[in-house]
Amino acid sequence: MFKFDPEKIRKDFPYLNRKINGKPIVYFDNAAMTQKPNQVLGAIDDYYKEHCANVHRGVHKLSQEASGLYEDAHKKIGKFVNAKFEETVFTRNTTESLNLIYYAYALRNLKKGDRILATSMEHHSNYVPLLELKKSRGIEVDSIGINEDGTLKMEEYGEKISKKTKIVTVVHVSNVLGTINKVKEIGKLAHENDSLFIVDAAQSVPHMPVDFKNINADFLCFSGYKMLGPTGIGVLIGKKEILEDMNPFLYGGDMLQEVHKDSWKPNKIPWKFEAGTPNIAGGIGLGAAVDYLKRIGMDKIRKHEVELVQYTLEKLKSVRGVKVYDSLSIENKGGIVSFNLEKLKCHETAGLLDSMSNVMCRSGMLCAQPLVESLNKDGVVRVSFYIYNTKEEIDVLIESLKKINL
Image 1 (tube, rainbow, N blue to C red):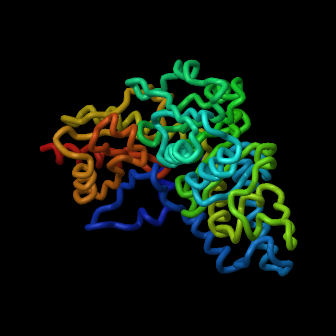
Image 2 (cartoon, rainbow, N blue to C red):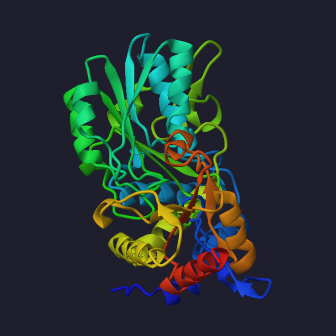
Image 3 (cartoon, rainbow, N blue to C red):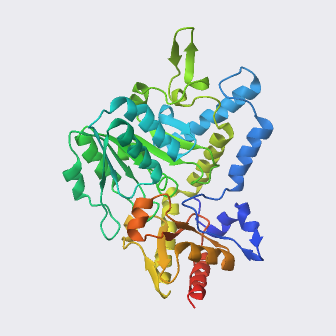
């Protein structure tokens, strides 16, 4: 059995070998991008050096090898979230996965006066497409509000879901507050109303066990680069029967089975939604990332992040003039803490942390401006954790904040 040991894990990550101004990097921007282990970098390198060819295009050996590796990645990632191979579509990122749904499903199935119900903590990628549907098609958009502690006002679902509500969408874990939303309960309410249920899982799949079938979402979206994988690769998990009934999002290349002078026939799923030459190396790299995460164990990853968040919140109490923007119980909170120092703007705090101690965090609106502006009109500072972070690194953050406050 693999014993969770951050110090052993850290040996797999090349970024930790780098020093800036003689000091090590303290990387706390994992909600935006995770670092990459040698195992993922090696898998990408191996594809380009040993198996570099296009997939599903040739009968020659290299193409067959590349196709096998690419298909195996789909199988690994589908199994990782308890979905079928044919339900696992590769995209560029969560943003493209969500847009695929709204363009390929909502634009074709919703009409003026229909409603979509989101929440007030959605990432721009899951909210701006809804505003565009409102603008171009007259679709009504509403949002569930947020309690003072950072949880959703669950009672509003009963008030706002109606027969005109065709889609209910929710972020699984807030990228600002870290709120872990009750997606299974929300999905049940959506399906009782015959509404489509969409989950933005960009901040949950990398950090905790996520079961597509258990949640019973119709669509689940996440990104590879937030879970040790490379950039340019994302995932759309969709129920088989819905994907089969949908039209493609893009046209050309691998999404086609047959093309004649006056007609064409789409490929079977998942290839139906993967037009053109895909990010082959990215898919293979994400498969290696999933292998790495599975070896550690998602339960252990979740436990580690809980310990780091608890430690951070306790230590922040010793920092004068700090405001933390939620009061969530730890079981309802992911590995994210957002805060501000009262005497500084968020970018000033983040800049000083970087220049003084190489503590790298995010500041600003966090791609969730409606929510962040409700907390602080100038933005917030966010620290977000992952498998290679340690309590000793948190101590560096805390001591740096104290020096800034002198």
